Image (cartoon, rainbow, N blue to C red; front, side, top):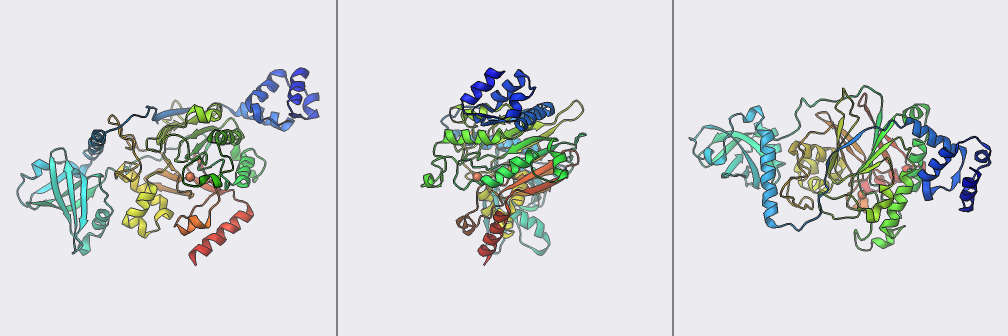
Length: 497
Ligand SMILES: [Fe+2]
């Protein structure tokens, strides 16, 4: 034992006298040294007790990976895009066909043989959308049998339908019902694949918690070190009120929404914004921080556009070549972008499905959907997330995000309705509920620059969303320092002037 401590001290680790004179067994000390590795600078009683406490609390909550893209990058062709659109059509149509309104659905070529004024229902992908000078909306629909035109007329009594039609986007697959006019369908209803209203709000029996955060951007100059340290201190019970302290040991999962590191070469001139230049060093730094999270908590981390690897989605998790340090953290699971994991499954509980998506497409929909743009664009990330859930697709329009088409699988299709839907990218903390899906946009841990605000971005950094998995109550905790909170208020007020 003395030999082990001597060796440690020779390496420059400070060993407190309490540890030297205490009765810790050799095995425990070895475990602590192993766990902290190179990051160990002070070995004191607090560190060891914390480790032992965490180990005791570690009942290894189950994390099951449901969807994780692991195929290697391949050169893709135009034909692959065609195949992925066919898959998209089939997948979405199979959801739509179960809808009561589409009970007597016909293919497009059959509709064309109908009599004038017949009631019709069909499913198609939107090829084209235009608004006439009388403000009527004309859409061109396509299915594997052909093309047809559909009209949504601007009148006073179909406001809801008209608004839905205005928000339709190219390449999405919808069902429509209406009357066949001979050359076109006069639409009376648009049916989206959507989340069923009957989707259950699952609650587990045990009081446990999950935290949702992301866009840590470790390695960047504007990384909010103080705020993140506050979060780590809170997680380790060093700060926070009594109520919070009671919760901490019950936190079982932390979900990270991607952009773990600031990356390199993401935009021209990024070097001047980097505190750590090399991406491998940035991941090492990330690992240093993430190791401070108590080990009884399972961390599940997706990938963002600032992480290493290809930009196109589905985006693989960072490679071991760069992110070796992350792979060595035993309680961390890295997944692709997007990915689905199931947590909390027991013999009599199916667990919660969590859809993690960094959010490459979010900005496109903030800017291109009339109803979302009118209500605040990126500030209403909840509306964008709802829009995507209604479409059951993370990027319905080709070009709304970079996609590497896989002809075997439309990986951005939302086949199963999740219980939690986590995105990041916009850096704005947001929580909302849509048909019992908890939609969370992670916050971020980078300072908000005036430039970001001027460009219409209004991040809300330094926040963590905490969910009680027993009651499904949700709270956002703000870890900004007092000074940062004041600065944030000032910046937002100035931008509004
Ligand atoms: Fe980010």
